[in-house]
Length: 85
View 1 (cartoon, rainbow, N blue to C red):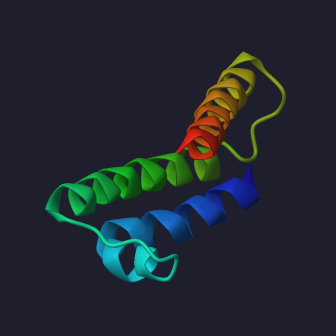
View 2: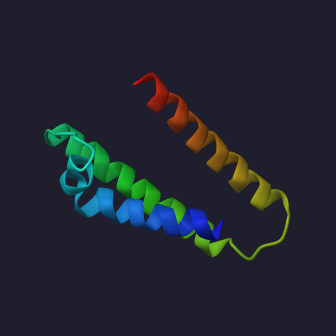
């Protein structure tokens, strides 16, 4: 959970404050709608970073299992959509 929190923080800050700078390194150009969507994704990633960082020390319980399941679904769907695009 700690690694996920750190990566989410870095990516979230990048998407929130500099989506053009971050994505032009991969050859993408963004219009206003794309920048808005990237910033929304950045805000979501920062929320996930806070969630995973604040729950990093809880033991195995239903709450932790629910968080891990939701992160798995989130990342799994993102991976599949990236493959399709």
